[in-house]
Length: 284
Image (cartoon, rainbow, N blue to C red; front, side, top):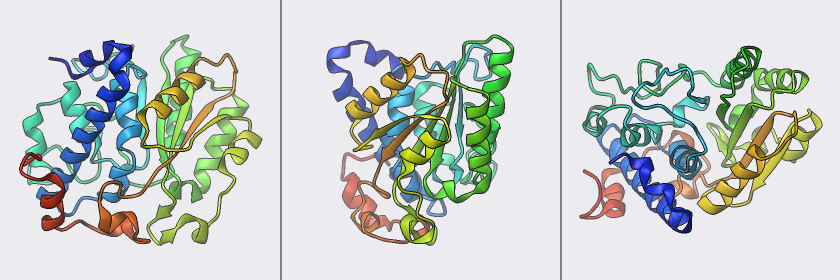
């Protein structure tokens, strides 16, 4: 059964999305157990955000034909933190679930850094700061061609230190790209520590607003109902402004050794801790 077909009943949608997010988190940890070289903390913070985007019907995706012209474009700019995308894409039907067993193995198309050879990935996303510029150009091209598709771009808050991001922020506002929706995984930490100590960007929503964007902040970025309401509020707007959903999240969500660590971005999780989290019923 197509994984997204489960979510047609609005009465149970929030619970089903929460259950699906739990499964994605387990699968992400299982991938990291098999491939410890992957970055896991920044993947775990974005699980609910991406789960809502893909499974709620917000994003128009075409797994049977990944490059179908009528698809929304989804760009994962914070590429190092996107191994949680692999189980989502597999579950949605972009490639077989069995491929998750091969992440980072020789000959596999699923590497530690996403690549457009992976069905469902629009761009390579290793270096930070490029995704919003690519997304802005994509959104402008779609509008120029009269296409109704939207462009979603996932950014990390640490990534916002890159100057190229703010060039794209200005470009998108100048061209009134209302079909561009940025999503900020605002987990408060980056490679060298807390974002507030490296380059403090607060108040982030006011900065985007000052640049001409419509903003919506989600207090708990792991609450699927809050995230869904945020997406729906932005997409229902008639404003010509580009839009940004700022989700406050926890880096390493679900893993005790990561949740309180300033350097979680570069830390791995030991097999014993993953085993304890997944338990006997967890993913292999």
